[in-house]
Length: 121
Ligand SMILES: [Zn+2]
Image (tube, rainbow, N blue to C red; front, top):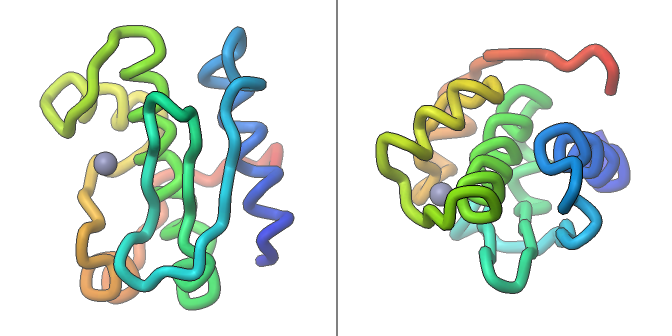
């Protein structure tokens, strides 16, 4: 899958989950191996690792993307900014595992999963 494909996925998820605010958010791809993704809450930027995309399947990248989008939802609507129970609750509701990806080369790539597959995309 290409970066353009995941950019379109991210836009569609944002439109679905942040219908009034999605246009404020930007998706960036960064070539880091340190993080799978990152959500800059105040700057409204979601970053995804192009390295993650290169070495992972759709379900793994989707989980990371939804992880970051759950942060965007939690902050935008509830001013909530950590990985606590409320954030996990939001994760489960958008089809995300709620896993943390600080060391994603060990957790994401070696742990294939597919919680949901959005056939619209
Ligand atoms: Zn997080």
